[in-house]
Length: 166
Image 1 (cartoon, helix red, strand yellow):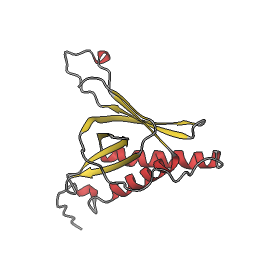
Image 2: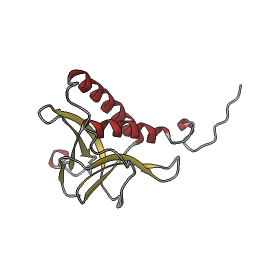
Image 3: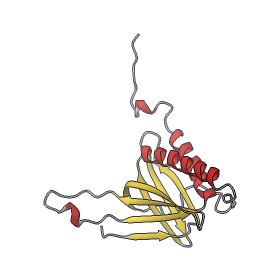
């Protein structure tokens, strides 16, 4: 895939959702601005870690800058929007904060699998930057955690029957 850079500044919506039955769900991070919808595949553990990191960041921002914050913008439907056509699988994500704009940026970087005969330094991963207000990020954090927890009652079973002997 060609190296792409997408900047959604600011997003109209951002969400985490799944496609598929419990035990076989594929997690997606999705954001959009105007008519552009960008979807990326993430792991369940990434959705959980993202939720935790956002909660920690927003709690810290609310404590440090209580005069800024809730705007009430961008909340509502947290379902995935069609079409769900992932641009890439996410390797890593990072969060940043622009104090002047009171905006949080979520940066997602593509997972690159390099062949043995390729130079790993020559391959540039694709990147998506999603600029969000605090309310959008707070809603994303809560929804991502709910989505992760809505799976199987015991995720350790991983779709298998587990027998216990006493």
